[in-house]
Length: 365
Ligand SMILES: *Cc1c(COP(=O)(O)O)cnc(C)c1O
Figure 1 (cartoon, rainbow, N blue to C red):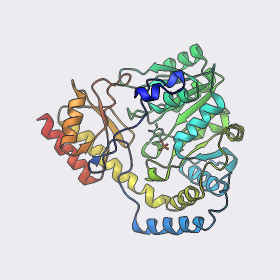
Figure 2: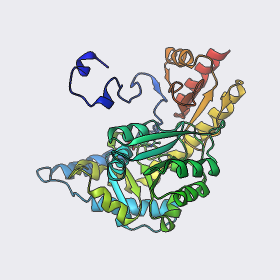
Figure 3: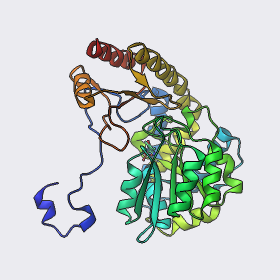
């Protein structure tokens, strides 16, 4: 970062660090941040405008600090999606699941404590640990990016983390971690086990929500940013025991979720069937990408999400640039742990996916 920043009394552990973020290039075919490519329908936009308009009439007042109506709707949605009965006391929401995860780090991490994750995984987990002065241990995954039970349990026994992150489907690999691993990790230590299920609606595998009854230190985080096609509204949530939710109340900012956000999220949840109706289309385009990238002689990591890793390239940065030169933006995470040679791309609409595949064919032929 700039020397002007270094001249400030910024925390020692932040000096020289770069902020997190992928390029935002609205003119490109944007397949780099795992969004749902389908914009809300005109009918949903009208409903959102009405709901946000009604909330606007109350903006002289602080919003419901406990977001009771929203958490009730989230409990109903998640119960229906997972088949597990959930009470509102088990649900918590914030501005994107990133804020949810930050609150978890604030409440259960902190100086002298450690968080652990299995890499490559979501780079925000170590960044949220750092921002809350929580130590970080990154344990490597297997060659095929899987996470086996013995490796996971041994790592937890060795490091005794206050928080263990398990991401399934894992970003950026798309791979799944079985519920047997989640249970064993919970059993192996006395810390929080956070299962990040940001992409659960795309997966065929069962949710860790089914384990909540028997695992009091388990947290399952979800987001409306991916399958739900609501990234711009910034809504994430988690399910856990009521005691975990009480702990998060100790660190959340008062009135952290605006009345406008709560209104928009509730409206989207009322249209869940329509929004999630795009999931099948997205999965079809993903399966098409798996087939057609494979037919080019490239490798694809098996995925249960809306994105995939493809490669391996000797110079992934050059492939990334060549795709961008053809108007297609993908993600180059190849400098991250265990990701040398790989690029990540998410499924787009049919024309967007075609644009990507055509560009890739041109580059590799
Ligand atoms: C995208 C993503 C999130 C979600 O972030 P939001 O803050 O809810 O938009 C969380 N975890 C993982 C693994 C992700 O890929």
